[in-house]
Length: 63
Ligand SMILES: [Zn+2]
Image 1 (cartoon, rainbow, N blue to C red):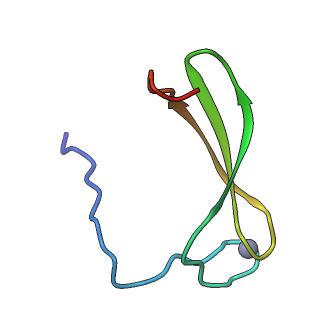
Image 2: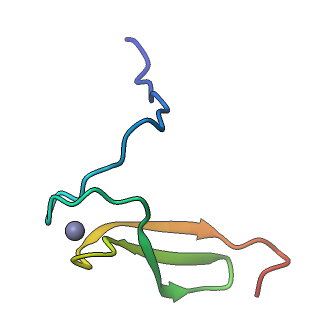
């Protein structure tokens, strides 16, 4: 089976699926944090609908 590939492009702006506005950034709000992980909720800056949640491993120099 072929591997799924991701094409990196920066010649267009993503569109929010909720308010149909082109967004050049997302708003990230901290949801909760543990000792090793930082969970961020990413929202559209216009309508504030949630676009995704990520878990990020904390780096040792961050608090
Ligand atoms: Zn939106």
